[in-house]
Length: 273
Image (cartoon, rainbow, N blue to C red; front, side, top):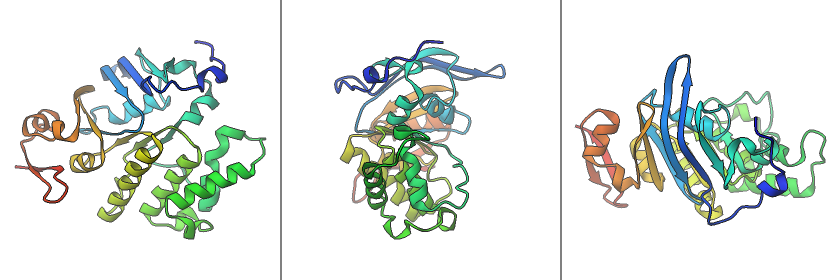
């Protein structure tokens, strides 16, 4: 196992370097190949929608980015340094991960949950400073949750809870947010609200955001780029206009789909024929 490089060396970003690069990533589990030959480069300040059929490898790819699982082969680097070489705390200061099923909050208030985002910066025994408190307050304010700051997370609606978890990621002050199906249990209003928020903060703060989505139209509306997986490989990668096309969609999803422009935004919208 490679030794962790000194955090002082790894935390200095070079803005001309891609934020995250993956080369020939393969992942096998229980004798089955889940991902194969993944080549992917993620830039700063962009939202990437990760789409594909069930079982295409979307969540596994996100977990590799988040260092939740280790690829069987291939290489990945974060800000030019090999992914395994990052110390745990240094990595957590850069990358925040929200799984599809978030942990139980055990009666925590929104403020308490969001404050957990500061853990990578001061650890278990470190002092929670006024700077930490300011970051927590700013994150709660930015996600429009100030009125819920002292409310139990469990008592909130699904959309509000997702915002609370995003607030925790913002308080973490990470440069990359990885979210696995954050809209899967939300109604249309909250789907729109959560994804619009992610797009706004990505562009405001120069954050790299990767979101696993099932709805190609949501991906087209809120992503700068779409990465489509099929059978564990990247079958298409490009702007929404490049991906939401009859031939590409049929190749990715296996069904014939029509496409028309949104009457106001002109974003491409697809539908099953």
